[in-house]
Amino acid sequence: MKLAYWMYAGPAHIGTLRIASSFKNVHAIMHAPLGDDYFNVMRSMLERDRNFTPVTASIVDRHVLARGSQEKVINNIARKDKEEKPDLVILTPTCTSSILQEDLSNFVQRASLETESDVILADVNHYRVNELQASDRTLEQIVTFYIDKARKKKTLDLRKTIKPSVNIIGVLSLGFHHHHDLVDLKRLFNDLDIEINQIIPENASVSELSKLPKAWFNFVPYREAGLSTAEFLSKEFNMPFVNITPMGLLNIKSAVQRIQAILLQLNCHRNYDDYIDLQTKYVSQAAWFSRSIDCQNLTGKTAIVFGDSTHAAAMTKILVKEMGIHVLWSGTYCINDQKWFRSEVQELCEKIVITDDHNIIGDMIAKTEPNAIFGTQMERHIGKRLNIPCGVISSPVHIQNFPLSYKPFLGYEGTNQIADLIYNSFTLGMEDHLLDLFGGHDTTEFLTDTLSSGSCVQWSSEALKELTKIPGFVRGKVKRNTEKFASANNYNIISLEVMYEAKEKVSN
Image (cartoon, rainbow, N blue to C red; front, side):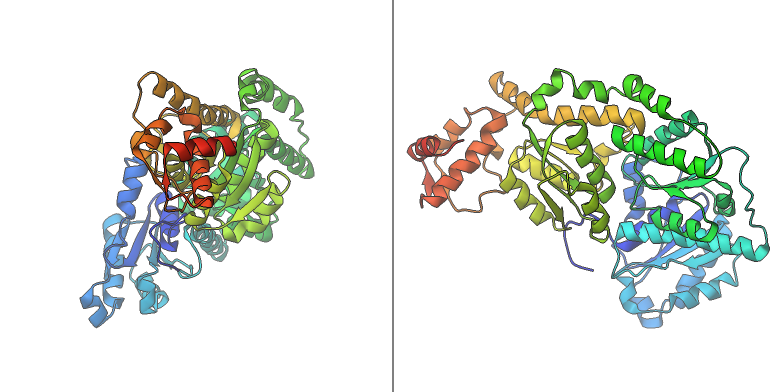
């Protein structure tokens, strides 16, 4: 738990609420003070979803602090049970209300005696885990609860489906392009002649969770949510699972081959080699495009990658192995998953960065000066300040990365989207150059707004005017190198003379 004005992953209760709001007819009650109850606004604004169950806030105010929360929390649970008739009510505190150290599990036990709905308390340590870890744990907790409930009632059906089938685990609200990815995942399994048994938690019913063991195997597209659930089902029912994200041609091939191997172990003989070859050659345009004359423009280009472990690792592999781009460094803010991340990218880049501090990332980008950035919303802001183009490939993101149009990152259609994103990110610099030449947008105002210098050197008006004549796609690098030269030589003001001297002595 820490105080910050920017976080790559939000507080734990957001992860729990994302899971609860993804299920059908599941109601979340958040035990929190005013100020923590912003989830409904965030969900409705970003996803533009017409139909979702809003979260109820059981507000902790001065009256509650004086009398205690028990009566208010229990009354709120009972009221929602009567009004909404949900299948499940899940109670979660926030990191703020957790400071009160109240016995919420006792509140839940008492409330469950008065409700027809199931009631559980989110089993999450709000001081030790973040949004992504909490979503993974909450999904596992809900699945475990209903599997155990079915066992007690002796309604657990362990008979496998007649045809090969799969559970897709981890598609949830506010996920990065999750709804678009799901369309392509459905298409992929349809092409492989594999039925979809369950998709959880997105639009799923908790009453159907007892049917999860009927599937032949589980598929986890994102490591951040769903992996613990797949491991639980593997331990309890010996269900194999695939956790290779089908992002990029190489990963798709590996995922399909892993599925083929699992089916073979289950005495179902399938050969998907022709399918992979057909999709790679004719459906996905990425393989052809990466060898085309257009992509020769990317020769010698450099990039950095940063995001959640799933997307950052996959994007690094795509850039290096499929597009032939040099990745200076690759990193993730998923510190808890760093071992897996390091194993995935250690042979693909010069350096691996594991941090959740955006200031460190900003300084590293400024020092390494890549031709393009592939990261989160924060890296896009950093790129704007440094005049370096950025393609967004991971949460956290803003509303423009919840498009109404169809833009998957997974599957064979996803490979086309990613190829476009990569190519267009690198060519944006030339677009700025043409805009400068033909009277486009005015970039003068933000020329001095960079992260790289850290020095106190000032630019004279004549030098700044000269700087505006330099093409936009190299202007930032020229400016930073000139500032470094001035600082090294103890110049407090960069005049035209200093600028020309730097040009002669430094390879700009």
